[in-house]
Amino acid sequence: QSEANREVSRSVEHYNLEMILAIGYRVRSPRGIEFRQWATERLKEYIVKGFTLDDERLRGNNTFLDYFDELLARIRDIRASEKRAYTRVREIFAMAVDYDPQGDATQYFFASMQNKMHYAATGLTAAEIVARRADISKPNMGLTSWKGSVVRIGDVATAKNYLDEFEIEILNRIVVMWLDTAELRMLRRQQIYTREWEIYLDKFLADNELPVLDGKGPVTHDQAKELAESTYHQFAEKRRHNIEQEAEKSYLEDLQNSAKLVAARRKKK
Image: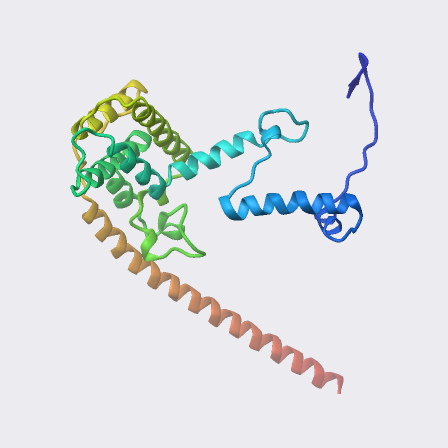
């Protein structure tokens, strides 16, 4: 490091973080009490809010490693999640002059928005992604993400589950950018009608030089879902058969090993 216009090299002792935490909760000194108070405050914030942040480090006022970009990426992914995005779209839609809380306009627009954004990120509608990429011959049926430890039928009709890492990054950025601009209009109380939101979305995509979907695409949601679920049943049967074969193979190997062990013991006698 630099000190008084000269480079200085020093050996610095490093300690295991898990060890520090374990000792911190056991030491009875004033410093130990101070540590536990700090740790409890952080843990309380995490339990109540679902997150805790080191603001100074994230502002760049800290010499430790900077994970700011990772934080931004995780926030983008959360904001772009279907449930979170739908909540924001519903709130934004509620600001429209002719908004009808009992109507289907919000749900229709959200489905249209998803379709247009998937198309902007991949060149395919959500239904086309599912129909083209659900493939029994591929590992995990072509899915790149799913809930739980294995692919289930509830995972196969969701287009985002088939996207690769680059496509997800593009899609998340598109969703977050549009939500930001839409929220800005909402914040400024700009008058807008529900039918204008789709026009506004198309303009947003075009202004960012992204492909704009015209219409609904050649594959319907129901068609894609039916195809994906049919493929899943074949995939699940193939997976079950493979598991049974592996179990049988393992069982035979165990029998052979047991037989060899018995034979070896008899020879010793």
